[in-house]
Amino acid sequence: GPSIFSSVDQRQMASVRAALAEGEVVVLFAGPNNVWHARLWQRGLYPRNPVAVQFEGEPPERLRALRERFGIRHAVLIGRPANAPRLRVERDLGPLAGLPGRVAFGELPP
Image 1 (tube, rainbow, N blue to C red):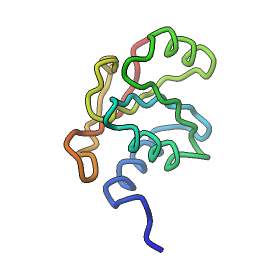
Image 2 (spheres, rainbow, N blue to C red; image 1 turned 60 degrees about the vertical axis):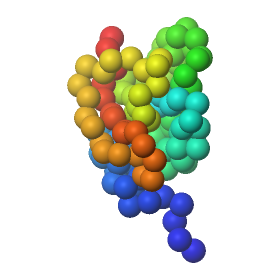
Image 3 (cartoon, helix red, strand yellow; image 1 turned 30 degrees about the vertical axis):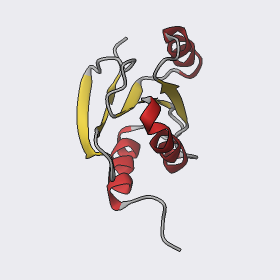
């Protein structure tokens, strides 16, 4: 049957995979209206790259703990969730497939 991943999703995920080492964990920031896309991205990057999701409203201590545990250096931003940090080097990957908002990828500050 048809893929659940649109051509836009596939292109964006391929850009992220190309920038990450195999097995490298990435954190994904998503707002409350982007839960479906967050889970889609988790599935799309797995098993090559595990994705830790940080939803809007979760405590910042959780992100610190994830970064320490998994050595996370990169992030994907789905839309512009309020808890998303400013990235050191940010690449705009284009619009969310079928929804308002954009996807960005980049390196987290130290």
